[in-house]
Image: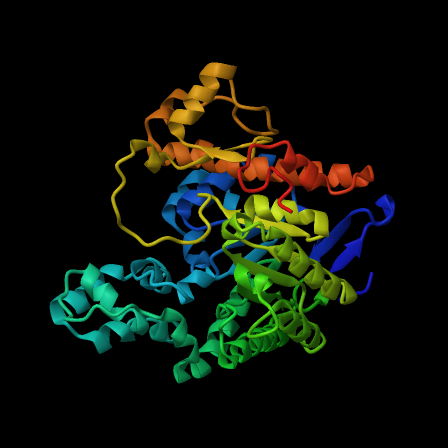
Length: 470
């Protein structure tokens, strides 16, 4: 296999299946890639690490990952063993900044992420008590400052500071701020160096969102951002120390696209799939990328108008382009929609462990006591249940469906403890179920079954995908 060949057509199955390379690992596809957000997610993965296949990738918040790994709540679970160190050795890591932080007004989520969870109170105190906006913004890393600045008024209002304005923030406009020109390259270079600290890591760079009406400035920023990530990885790798067997450590980026689903439904004007395809084909020949990541906004909306087949058409075009360069394609934040698209030979699909499509604003009240326990997916039925529904299911059938490594009943000590319920039950259920689904799809492909994901979902009770989504 060529060193630059990251997509592999499996000989033992006569190319019915594919695998892909991340560092030293050859990973059977399709693969479910769980996405970590916080300490609770890491603890959930570590609790069930023995049930996760060696080499199964994990996606983590790029800027905050090093801080999360060193958190005392993670270290306390190790009980003297280096669980997180061993986990990182056994699983490739995708460094991925949540792209919605640079699109939506997420306020506390954004500056909390920028500060890695440290110094949040100081930031807020400067705004509230000192009323010194410039000083507060100066506490943030340079790359994050324009994005916080664009939503500063809404941040101030949530902190109880009267601004006299109520403008709707357009956070994505920060991508066109001149300060990003200066701050982006050092930022992704820092992420590349973080990736080099791990044995098998990939950088998925932050990029601006594209919608059909996006002007050329955003389109060009997508190109320049990915190019800078490629150059940053190249520079970091050149500067890296030699590793084992006198081989220099190398980190590669994935080419990242962050798109609204409506682009697949777009005609000849504006940003459309043809233009994106042409751009991608040209850019993949320019730099050394290890794959392509496509984050799509609004999968559910595409099924409401029976337009999911247009997303299928778009993904087929991307897959065809990637295959020319022997590059895998993964779909973060896609969950069962991504599972459906494994029929089109994508290599990986993922989701946040809380089942949300993206990071959500902090705050807000819920009047349903079940909400704090999170949602639990159900294999084969392919829908999610709240805690009360889970208990009803167990009363009716005696236990949850059998999945390798998964508890089929809820331990008593977990039942009335929301944090422990999420960490020890609902989140592990999510990633172990999706890993099992990916394994089943691969097995069906080896048998020569055509569109096994569509067959699997057609038997489900998933309201968006059960009817063939055509």
